[in-house]
Image (cartoon, rainbow over all chains, first blue to last red; front, side):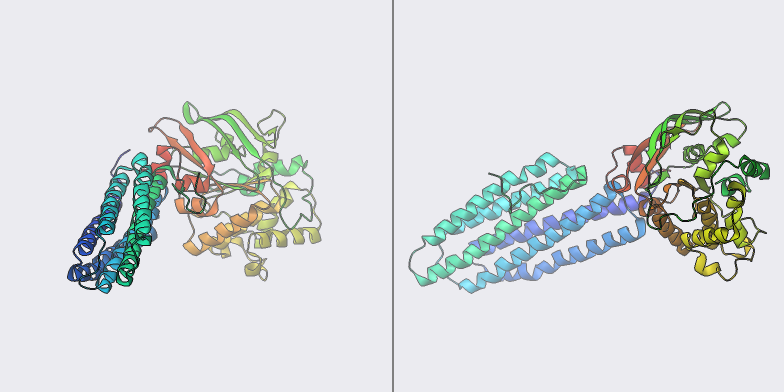
Length: 228
Length: 298
């Protein structure tokens, strides 16, 4: 089809897609720092992550407003409309993932300067985080390439995170009688849970990829009606 | 609806057409009372319709249904044949001397191009509202609405006529604005009011189908929304097909959307896709439809 009509609108939409998906890069950086802060009990780095979340929130506000303006002024329909709807979801996911990093980083100082850390559990949490980063970048590539198969594969990747999370839980149960150590383990479980949610958000982005391509929304996995 | 249809100023279809309608006198008087709430309307079906102006093949092989009690929007860029197709649905296409119709168009199963069918009767059953409001300028508001009755139904008692005029004006959302000046000329109304007057005139003869050719293109946004609301209400009684260039209007006002397109200038227009309006505007199945509704061409 001739590409001469509505060029600026198309460029703006492309720019906003890149900007919304770029939010995932900000999240990846936040997750990396969060993991580093956990690994080294780095309270300062944790505070930086908390403060830096403003950048993610700013991205959300800026792109969200621009998408609303496109809706109001350009009357997008069909694929454009689905894309804008999906980008609004993705932005929300980005914002939520950023907040989960903040949640974790706010807990880090609570465990004290030299916490009674269980290295096995720390290792599990770092693996969860690293796997979550894989999901985030895969979700981004799936969206950019409108690749349903790659998006669908996020479910398999997410299972890895879920299994690690269960393993963390098991370790926490068996952590022993020491009260400080148990408190530390409880806190770390909340962190693991936050990372698990980050991975879920990446799967949600995959579902939006399928929506953009097919026009049908369906959950890849329905937590309230899990298949056997 | 011989009245609004046959007297279109632009085409100078004239009063002889209408007097034919009067003299045929075969139509029963409209029921004085129709069910106030909804009534089943009739289905218009086109099968393998090809339309020509002389040698020019304007519309090729259109098969589609205009569903009863629904609003069907015909969209597509200029020259794609949507208006020509609309005009074939009440045999107005043939008012052009060189025009020709092939294929079958039926109203509830009855071929409207059948050899014994009177085109004037077809136009009473399938009414038309035009792009620019065309009330009879010197006729009173009352007489404008009653025009079709006078021509179509033979003698109608004054009291009955009063009731039909009032009901039609109410049906067209115009009654409250004009009830105290029914004797004023139709041209004294605003553009939006004139268009509603034309709709009142069209529905006064109780057609089965209302065809509307860009009914809002000459109106301001408020008058446009008033007509769209009206269309939404009229579908409880009529089958409605509307040609519009305004994509937002199609998405707001119609239940079903049909997209017409032509491959290139000089080629005939074709029906590309027809489906629920929601589907056409969120996930159409054809790329050409997608490009058109997204404003990428046309």
